[in-house]
Image (cartoon, rainbow, N blue to C red; front, side, top):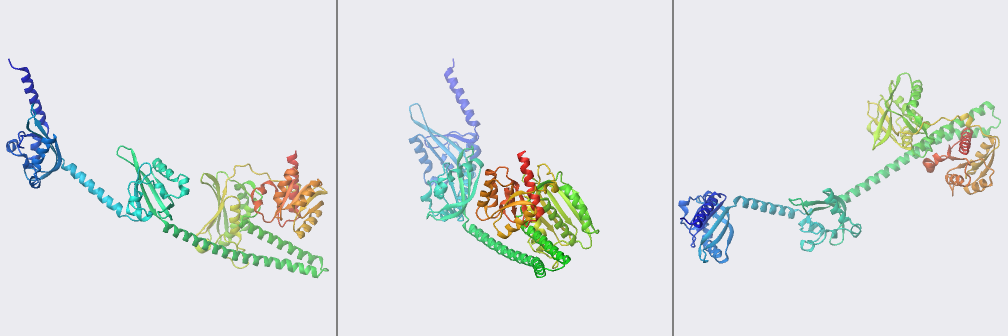
Length: 639
């Protein structure tokens, strides 16, 4: 009967032989103790090129290069395997056709049950492609390393996840002054100023890069010698193939020269702007002097004649007085335009429907600018509620319209167009006054808003029309723009904030101007001449007047209680009129206060909304209206 153990061993050996023969990616074969080949699998035949009948019995050294055989590598491999139990190496091997391939070889000794060496097991794999990839990668890394090291205008280096420097290129040494052996292993925060370190800027930079994928900034950094330089810094996080964060790539460039050039350019621009301001100031001063000299000539001349001839007939006296009054009105208008240009004109704002005003203005313009100019309304805004000073707004529109008329001597079309505008989430109304006139060349367009700049003949314009438009728009919280080209007409555009407030109700000026007989007015004015004029004017209005030179006297007089209303100048030495009014609001609640101003930065702000304001130069009608309005408001608050 057959031995079952022997049969099992035979089956096992057969299966093992089938396994070895099925492997084609590895050469698996046996050597006898001297190194001659005893077995040969298909994998060995595939990439070494020998059939089994060609190679069995041959020494395995034929697979080695001549250099390796001369160095006795085959015999040394057998000795090492027999002595140490394993030999493993990579190297060039030779195929049957003489070509070489890079092999990974493992040689293990085979011993019998008594430990006697009976041969070797040899496993070889062709890893030429892997070696070529590794070699290409190594060469690429070497080229990249040479590239990075060759860059001297940029500091390029890496940080570990905690911010310590792990490598250092020549550019980093040139810019920051540290050699690689001085800085590798050190924390990159040493390049920051003490103030930045105290504020946690290095940690914030790494956190930002990790959170947002990039950190980029320009700031001052510190060299080894302690000097500061302007640096453009970029930090990117580095992740391995599994997504794990392994560090940061940091690139720094010295931009001190560029920053210095930018600063010098900014200084040059500022100097040029200052020169332009001085030039504009000179033109403004000359224009003011010219226009006011003309006005003062009329006033002074008329006054001199009246003083020299007290017996002048009444009709002539009346003509001279009317000339003085008319010239004074022109001076007041000129001053108002100057203040509007300088954004210092105190406003009397109301919430109006711009479309309603434009409809009325269009009808008026049709009658005044000539029959050869067609006035067209294009009211495209959805709603046109704006909070403005109506008089200043109408003046701005009229100024633009009259300029348009002068630009269309042969006729044309004047269009008043409104539109909705949204800027940064805020709602505005755009009002464009456009003509089909001659237009403006580029050099004139650049100076369009300058005060007293005009291309009209002498005596035909003051040069304040567009300046007033600019000042009005700025005071209203918006802006003015002009677009024009020669032969293509001009468009003056006012961009005004849209108001959500209710429309203002017009006051009945006649009833408001009626003052109670014997109204007790505390008149506060530091200028003695204006104070005397104001006292006489108030007495003409049948008021009982108490005068004060400054706010201290006024507070004392108001404390006595014999006052119905306070009429005070704004600009005074010591306590201003606005401060006086606010103090009286605390000490005498309900006491009406009227502010008088020709110029005041304060009234341009909140004070104009808090108190009634009358503009200088004022007359009896303006003062009586302001006082009556203040009294009426005071009564309504008490009620």
